[in-house]
Amino acid sequence: MNHSPLALAGLTIERVETFAVALPTLRSFGVSGGSVTVAGKPSIRILVKVSADGVAGWGEATPIPAWTYETAESIVTTIDRYLAPAILGRPCWDLDGVTTAFDRAINRGFTIGAPLAKCAVDIALHDLLGRALGVPVGMLWGQRRQDTVELGWIVSGQTADEVADCVAEGLDLGYRAFKVKVGLHTEAVDTAVVRAVREAAPEAPLWVDANQGYTVDAALRMARNMAELGVTAFEQPLPANDVAGLRRLREASPVPVALDESLRHPSDLATFVKLEAVDVAIAKVQRSGGLTLSRRLCALAEDSGVRLMGSGLTDSDLGLAASLHLFAAFGIDTPVDLNGRQFLKSSYATGATVEVTDGTARVPTGPGLGVDVDEAVVRELAVDVLKA
Image (cartoon, rainbow, N blue to C red; front, top):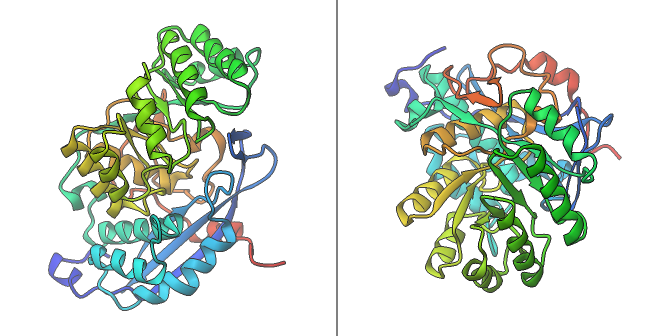
């Protein structure tokens, strides 16, 4: 059902539902904090459905306790008991007002509070608005600078001897850029793994991500090693709140330092810009609490002359589509880490979904996110994460 813009003004949020779904895992994946996916063990994703006057939108949250503090259980209870009650009856179009209501329900504290839970609802509202008007998310914003986004193939957990097979698999699937997770081993082993990737893909764009795994001195040693291997960016080498260390590293590193976990809220980026402590800002929809705040962060980076790169949280297709709309809106034309397709299957997306060919994703053009969710499949896959 398509609504006119005038009718949309009276569309209010009627219901918010959460579903913890168990999706098939294709490969194991780890970061410096621990495991993200385990082959043979289902991957839990939290899907959110927001309904209003016969129209529904869907969003996603990716609980990764090895990366941040939100768990499947906390995301479900945060949405059901705090966020949903705060926005019921609000106009669907008032995304700014929803963001304010979220901050009152779960306060930011030092930085944004419960970003993954907030993100799932925010994405669902964008999907709902697009579907109500019959237009894709980029058209809602009046902003889409490109139609495709190149993806990077992830190397994580392999030894140097195993890297060649992993890279070959990515190359066979058409991927031409690679991201390596470091901080999982000693500096020597991490360097050997990156060197093995470079040898297996001599001409490929290559960047590394430490997920806060190093000290300043170790990061500087690694940066020098990475420069010799033609690495284009060193992502989040230090703890998120080590502003002084990141500034010191940025001044001395021969490889541009990219910030991810440090930039949960746009105000975090403003701080790093003022202190001249950032080369590259990573746009990540879930980390920043959804598309509304992510657009603010990207616009600030662009206006401040800070280069943008893109990343995700091993999202299934809903999160993948949301990120593609954001990255296309801001013209992020370097390869991005949207690795969900590499590690899990989005079984609930049985109709229109994201097209990925030879490592390149096409930005969906259907209404909303452009991903059709089969609710019957969602309910079949749903599990009770709160059951003891």
